[in-house]
Image (tube, rainbow, N blue to C red; front, side):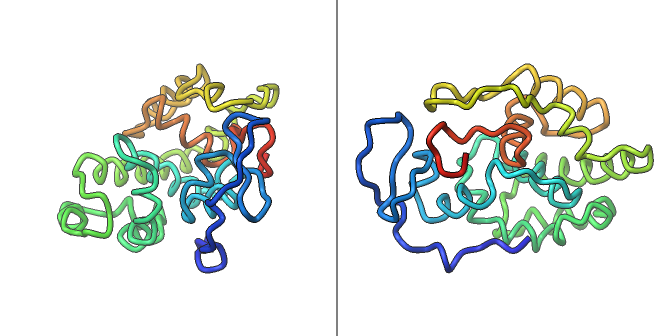
Length: 210
């Protein structure tokens, strides 16, 4: 999926005050957003058009899961700004191609400044592609695994303090993924992936993207 940039580079992250809903800011464009989603132009675009929106494609889901793994211990903005570099390095996150990566590919990626150069995370992405192909051979999709952990009854968070970093569902998803051979998918990473692909909707109450 093309990542939109140019049409959204205006200073939407400048805000006018709002005390009515903690964690919500109103941009100069008049749009109420989760505060984090108004902090930089990159975040505005990601918040408004991707984060929390339901995603079903296997390649797209694989990409998000890999990127959340690379994000562990880092700020998400770092990953977001390197996203096109990741897509080039990992050949569009086609799991068939990534699963065939060998030691030479890992060494290539370790020298690629366009991505996060962490051997464990790179090797995990390759292993996760292989695990995904095994899933598919078993007639299981990543979409099914992720969306089996959705909770449609979960209330909308009202403040940032209502947004957890893990949940029982993310612990369960983490265990399921690891049982199927996935790596770098701890409960926090699993929950971040669930948020990113819309399995949970953690846009705050009052956010336009809710």
